[in-house]
Amino acid sequence: MVLFGLITLPGLRRAVQGLQRAPRTEEQARREVMQQPISTPTDVNVQAQMYWLAAAPSASLEPSAIDLPLSADPVERSKQLLNALITRAPAPERRTLPSEATLLAFYLQPDGTAVADFSDDITSGMASGILSEQLAVSSIAQTLGANMTGIRQLKILIHGQEAETLAGHLDLYGVFPVNSPAAPTAPGTTVVVPSSPTPGAKKPSKTSPGTSAGKPKAPAPTPPRKRPPH
Image 1 (cartoon, rainbow, N blue to C red):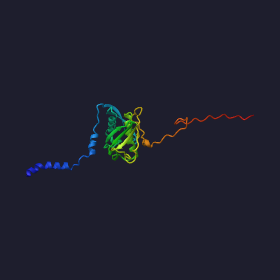
Image 2: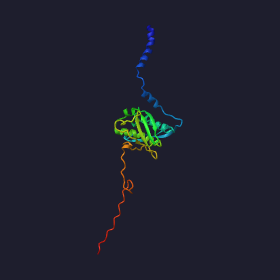
Image 3: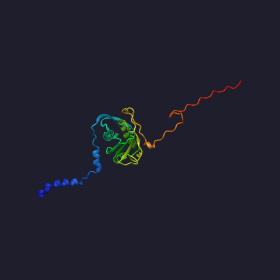
Image 4: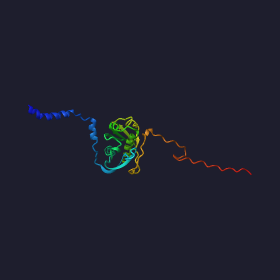
């Protein structure tokens, strides 16, 4: 019996250690699946324009061109771009989104609204602060705009639900504009970050009839002076 106990003891120890390990949560299992590279039959290697934090100063975005296999399908192409934005940052200090964040779903609506649904890690893993939150959303919008056509605005969800803020500051109830640049931005050029969603944008002031916006109205000609009688 002593010999039998010595033989079975290592197996019992491994079984106990296996039971002590915490089972994978549903969120962890889904994250492992979602972080696998997305590939489609129409993938073609292209120079994708990605927007990460500038090397210096880090309070702005800088475009970086990387080789990326992208699908012809708009939804799959957008997923590939946003997954690369999370996983392929040139350096940890240039990240705009937390490395543990996961893109759970992506939708394109007929009116040109892109809906990106992220895991809770995008809020818990992000440095709280209005600037860092603005840069994170802007990097998503700029990356989509530089590599996609037909997307006009961006809506962000957290775990399938609307969130009040991204990480305590930036309002997520509205939508964010997505602009497709007419020409690619040269590397090293910083990008202006939008400060608020579209619903909070200030409306342009009205101009008087016959006046072009941004151009002052021409003054009326001065009548000639009358000479006094001799």
